[in-house]
Length: 286
Length: 225
Image (tube, rainbow over all chains, first blue to last red; front, side):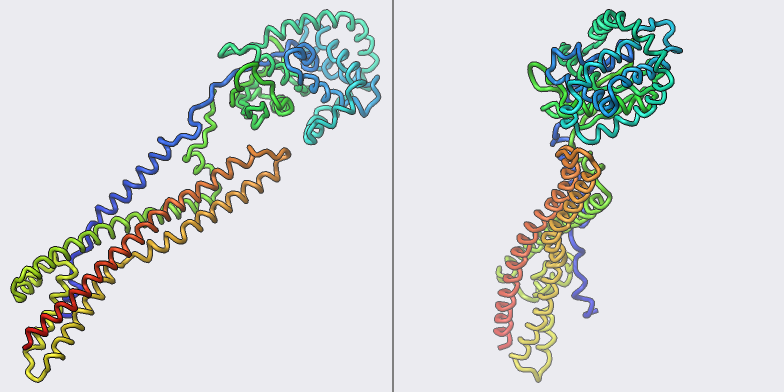
C-alpha cells in the first residue's frame, strides 16, 4: 500500500471542462473568421451587357459604329487584318465571303441574301492596307495562334467558289452599304444594357467585345452564350467564365477569346466599373 | 448572376492545395491540443495554488501535527501538493522515531528525503505537458511557414502555365497559402504565452514547497529533543 500510496492522488482536475473550453475557443474563432471578418463578402453589383449582332457579317462591321464611344475600338480590326496579311489582298475578299455564303444560304432563305455577303467585303478591303503590320505588335502572342484555327478552311472554299462569288458580290456591293447602315442601327438598338441605367457603359463594352469576335464558320441557329467576366478597376479582364454555353464550343471559345482580347474593357464615364459583369452574346438577331 | 469572388477564409481553405490543407489540418489539431492542455494546466495550477494557500493557513495556525496528518490521510483525494509533501514527511518521521538506535539527525534526514521525493513527484505532475506547449509554441510557426512556402511554390508553378502572367493569377494561391501561416501563429501565440505563464507559476509553487520542506524539517528536529 505504501508504494502506491504516493500515486494515489486526486484525478487531474477539469479534463472535461478543458475539452469543452478548447472546443469552444476554436468554434468561436471559426465563427469569428467566417462570419465576422468578411473580406469583400458583399458581392459587387453587376452590370449585364447583351451582345447582339444583326447579322453574322456584322461581327467585323461592328467596330465601326461603336468606334465613336470608346477610343479603343480600332484594335478589333487587327485580328481581321493579320489573317489576310500573309496572302495577297485580292484573294482575301472571296475567301471570306464563301465561308459565310456557303453556310448561310441554306439557313437564311427567309432573310435577305445581301446581308451576309456584303459585309465582310467592305471591312477587309480598307483594313489590310492601313493596319496589318503596326497592329500586330500590340497583340499578345497567344491570340494570333488561337485565331488561326478557324481560318484554314477558308482557302479551300475560296478556290472553288471564287468566280461565282465575285460576280454575286459585285451586284450586292451597292446594296450592302444601305444594309449595313440599317444593320448598324439595329445593332445599336439591340445592344441592351440593363441595371443602373448605365446604358452607355454597357454599350461601350458590347461594342468593343463585338469588335473582337471572330465567328467560327459553322454557327447554326442563334444560340446565346452568357459569360461572367471579372475585371479590375482598370478594365483589365481577369477571368472569363462561361456561364451558359451556346451549345457550340467553337462559338463559346471565340467569344471568350474576344472578351480576353477586348481587355481592357471600356470604363464607365463616371464611377468605378463593376468587378463582375455579365455579358450575353448572340451571333445574330432573331 | 453575381458570383461572390470573396476571399473568405472558408473559400481559401477549401481551395488550397492538398499539402497546404494537410498542414492546416495538422496545425488545427495541434492548436486544439494545445488549447486543451492550456485549460487543463490552468485549472491544475489554480487548484494547486488554492490548496497550497489553504494548507499553509492550516499548518501555521498552530494546530496539532498529528491531527493535520490524520486529516491529510483521510482526505487524500482532496489534498493538495503541499499537504501530500507534509504527509509523506510526517509518516517517515513517525516510522523512524520509533526506532531506538537512530540519531535525531538521521530521523530528520530520512523524513526530508521522503518529502523531497514527494516534492519532485508533485512538481513533475504539475509540469506535465508543459513541454508540449513549448514545442507547439516554437514549431508550429515553422510548420505554418512550410505550408505557406509550399502553397506559394504551387501558385507560381501554376503561373508558368498561363500565357499572361498577372498578379491576379497568383494572388488567390498566395492568399490560400498564407492562411497556413495564420493558423500556425494562432496555435503558437497562445501556447507560448501559456507556457511562460505556467512555467512561472509552477516555479513559484515549487519555491513555496521547498521553503515549506525546510521549515517543516526544522519543526521535526525540534520535536526530536
